[in-house]
Every structure is written in structure tokens, then in C-alpha cells.
Image: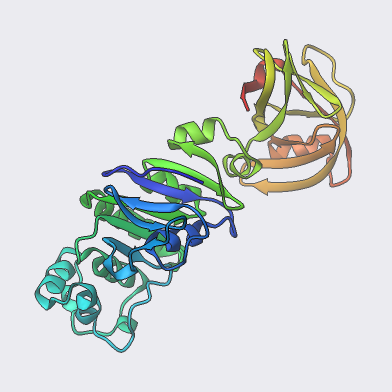
Length: 324
């Protein structure tokens, strides 16, 4: 896995649990040894597994905000912030920036979750690092405070002009805070780009599930995409390996074989039904697994329950195709 982070941009590492996101952050910081590869900052090699070059963590211009913040419980808040910079005056200045000056003498246990996060961020930024790493910065917060802290964090990240890299598995957090997304799965980069680029053209099942669309992969051949033994009609499909995306709202459900113009019609079985506000998502098992999204009224009218036989249809023009 190789990528470059530019000064001034906020990049989010997004991926499922176990993808290797935190491991990568710790490797960049020098907290875990590299088995292969290297880390370079401003042209200086911080670590190179091939040559054995290694710059200790404390000598790297990197600030790290850990998921649980890891503030020293026996120290006051100002002592925590001063720990890396060895200057109480600088620590007080950062507490004022973060709106925490009144808690300077308090212990971390006296702070709320959002206040502890700001204290941890102040401690990471006080030494003036070139790189800021954040591991799941909002994960320790409850849902009621997360939105407000997210807004504050976005403002603080905007004020820091170095390299900013954060780890998250929350797509809302990634889209809100980052300029660019890097999607990781099983230790590998599977997709990179802006939020729009990643969500409009998912390249893995994980991303498709986040976005809430059906993702198929197959071989295009002049208006159709071969997916296993099935053929999916897709307007604009030319030739070669492709991804095909179908939005669940474009998928119609019927209890009998439908008549009319849809070119994609096949029979399946309702494998699961999930009510989500004013919509119901129905997972269809069959030759081409598909998720359909209908209104609860339509669901009731069809009389669908888990295990029901059902027909699926959608138009060729509802299939978006792009190279794999």
C-alpha cells in the first residue's frame, strides 16, 4: 500500500474493523516497526525497512490523538498539554485556544468527553508538528455530543496547516472532516478520491454497503454485463471488466412476472426485510442478489415476508457502468 499526503489536505482512512487503519497510523508514528516499505516526511526518511533506517517516535514531527485520548490521569490538564512541549506557557496558550483555560488545574476525569478530546488535541498540537494523526477521534463520545464536537474538530483541523490524517469507520465523519478518502480493506488500499468520487463509483462491497447501493462486477459486452451465469442489461456497457451499480430505489418488486419494458427480470426470494423510516429495504436472494427499496405501503400491498417468492425488475438505463 502506497500513498502520498499533501500539506493542507485532510485525509480520512476509512474501512471496516480489522482493515489495518490503526496499524498504519501507528507505523507512521514509529510505534510499530515496518515489515516492509518506508515512511518519508518532507524528503527525510523516517523509517526504511530495507535499509534499517529508523527515527524514534519522539524525534518525528508527528502529533497523535489516540482513540481513548490517553491523557495522564495523575496530571492536571495543563501538565498533560505541556508534556510534549515542556513549556507551561505554551500549554496555557493552547488551552485558551481550545476553550479549556478554566480547566488548567483540573484532572482529566473532571472533563467531559468532548473536553478530553480537545485536551488531547491541544497536547498533540502544542509541539508544532508537521503531521497530525487522529485515531477514531469521535469514537469515545456518545451520540448526543458527537455532532457538536465534530463541528469543533473540523474548525481546529482547518486551522492546522500541516498534514492531517484521521482514521474512522464512520462515513459521515469521513465526509464531514476530510478532503480526500482512502478506503482500506484487509491491509490494502481499494479506493481513493473525494467523497463524491468514492460514493458515486464504489469499487468494493464495503463501500457499496456504506453508500447503500447494489454493486455487481462482471464482463461487459455491448449492452450487457455478464455476472456469473446471469446477464444484466446495462445501457452504455461496452466491453471489458466493469462494475455495475443499481440503486435499490430503481429495483421494482412483483409477486408475479411483470409485463412491460424492463429488460432485467428474474425471480428470487425475500431473504430479509428491514424497515428504515419511510422506506423498507428488501434483500432478494437469487441468480443475481439484489436489494430493493420500497415504501412500507408497497410492502404491505405485496404481502411480502421473509422467504416469500418475488419477481425483481429494473431498467437497463438504471444501471451505471464503469471500468473495474
